Image 1 (tube, rainbow, N blue to C red):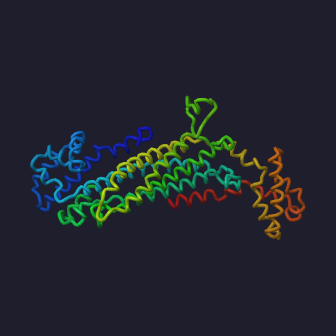
Image 2 (spheres, helix red, strand yellow):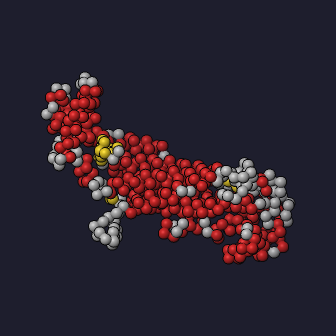
Image 3 (spheres, helix red, strand yellow):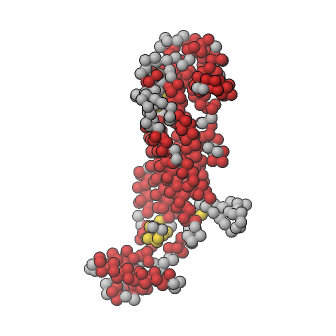
Length: 437
């Protein structure tokens, strides 16, 4: 991932230095286990741990000749360890090192992403609780529907990210597996107890059955989970972008002192953070298809998965880490324009109360079909007047219609036009969201 969308802690996970450190830990832990089993001298295991060093540049030089990264690493390691290096990698195959190290890197990445989700959830929780009592217009198809709570709008996203956290925890557990099973996974050349020891030392579980690689359905689920989280990020970003549109203006990203929105138009305040998140979500989701395609490998292994994982695993996790941090900042800095929310709420002269009038008529004995026809007829007249730029009031229109007043008194109608009615369960819904978290 390019530096523009990278944060140091996540980027460090995918550096050569971290990868080689994990490789060495795997080899050293395996040597310790082999020593305990009496396969190699304990002094050799101690010497390997003590003298084990490597240089990324030297490994690159060797790999140009060997065209094999693990062998290049082992050769460089041997240059430092000396004769005891013959005991390194006893009975193991390259995938034992590569796949187990990849599992460690993905668990490290998961831990950072889980922290990022916690930051997003905390930011959302604060904004939900400060806006639960703010009545705003709910929209379906982009059109005014019925009022809702602004806090509930945010609470839907809180619930989505709470689910995301549960899914990522499960994906982390699924990917955190160790395979030290030797060629084609039979343990013919390495005792299963070596695998158990390495797994315990690295905080991984034992892969119940590997071929020569850890099954790639685990990785597919991991990156599919990131793809779903990316879609939840984009879902919030789209809502944020819509709310900032000039015609809506109910909420907006923070706009810092000295910030400029356009090179040509000084008045512009663009939703650049949300648009950036929309783009990053596409990058993260782009990892899902190749991860799924990597599941199908030839026989006990091939390396068709290898090159693509080296590209999309760092890119997807680094982009997700950056996106979660950016999303949390967007939420924390978002300005909510309550006056504009109220203005939009009343922009259509009270048409959003139509269902309450419909239901009130049915309670007075009018058939649903007749009630719908009567209310819709009045509503369409108000729509027409508003479209012509005229002031219109839905309640006044209803009060002038005998088909309405023959069944509903002015008190009955007034009761229908109560905005707080729509958010009377807001706190209860929010408590349900929290209870499910």
